[in-house]
Amino acid sequence: MSLDIIEEDIAEVIIDQDELQQRIKEMGEEITDSYQEGTELRLICILRGAVMFMADLSQHINLPVTFDFMEVSSYAGTESSGTVRIIKDLEDDITGKNVLIVEDIIDTGLTLKNVINMLETRNPASIKVATLLDKPERRDYKHVQVDFNGFEIPNKFVVGYGLDYAERYRNLPCIGVLKEEKYS
Image (cartoon, rainbow, N blue to C red; front, top):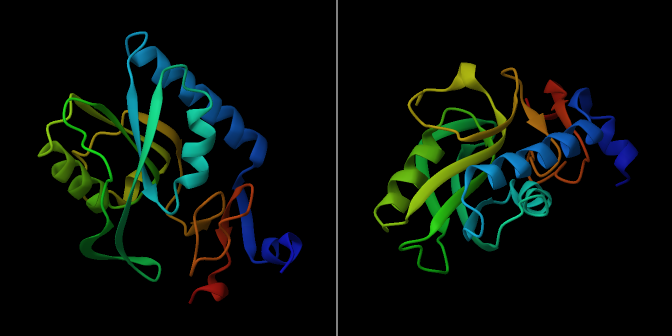
């Protein structure tokens, strides 16, 4: 399926490729500035949606970084199920490490709240959160702190740049609103 055909499924582009890349560069600089020079960061990518974001973001962080990955699920179709499942846990110990959770989107905040609570029990030196997208009007867990936020977006179902519906649309270079008839 060509990218043009996939783009036909998008009702509107809310963040284009240039805007994405510019903000990700700025976020990398903000992250660098928030830590002492030479601090090593363990970037924890929440799979699968944050892979593209973490890859691009890491190139703009001027500190030593290492990667690890978690796969966490709380969705059934387009809605949060209310239950968080850890599908893949970290490979490495984070005791004493400065952890930066890299998330694609924060919707209700349930997944992030559970991930933070679990990681805190592993005694990292610090935990901060970077998210590409934030839907503050959907947030049920308002006390969940986001340290680095790419974009606040409206409460619409978005895909692209790693975000999917039924594993499709991840390869779009932008963030777009999926046409309702494609998922209803």
